[in-house]
View 1 (tube, rainbow, N blue to C red):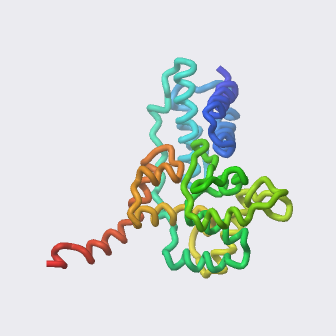
View 2: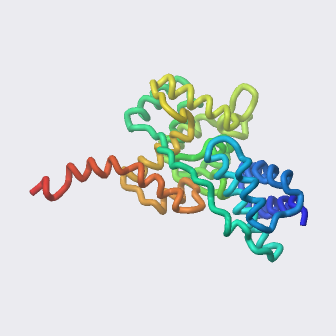
View 3: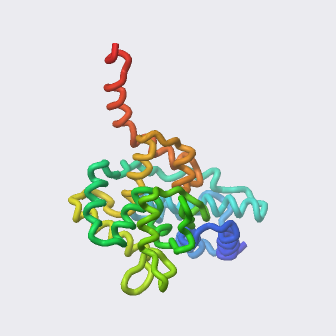
Length: 272
């Protein structure tokens, strides 16, 4: 069987499941390399392991290739009645990185640093309030703003997430008759890169430095803050649009320092 034909059918199956265009593009880019290297679909683990060994760059890059191939072969084994060779391929080792977040004081400074621009302040407020992805913020349209929620289209499809009244007021104030999308620049709707640059600029203006300046750091800060303030994993999973709760559970690990502080404060031994 031609590998490219199987890849094309896999991508169509992802589209039929309403996965986001960004996710479809991610799969296409990863599997394009594999189809080019192996025009005939490999049915044994050897060629797959050889292909993974050729992937250069960060460990995360090789692990991403592995995940794409795992999803592809799960589909192919069911569609074409094949044995799944990925069951015999060990995932590449990928060292865990500490997620960069923001402290409450940093978030307050960030909000203050963006206050001179309605668009930038609305964007920062929305990201802190909801933890949505950059692409989801870029895709927000006028009709997506509801009474107490917004509709976003993310990696796992469309979902409705709650927003604070303050965030809703800012979003409504940003709406114009001529623009379909909420966040716009001089040449039309802002894309992911435009939003990244705005958030990065606001962070630098607020004196926030370190790794991963940008909207994804706000997403991590939201996930941690939600749990620290008493939220539960299941509702956080729903809000953040995680397909698997194991992804959401990473945020629970970020709250360990806060748990230690609370233990020192509220331990029965201390209060006895």
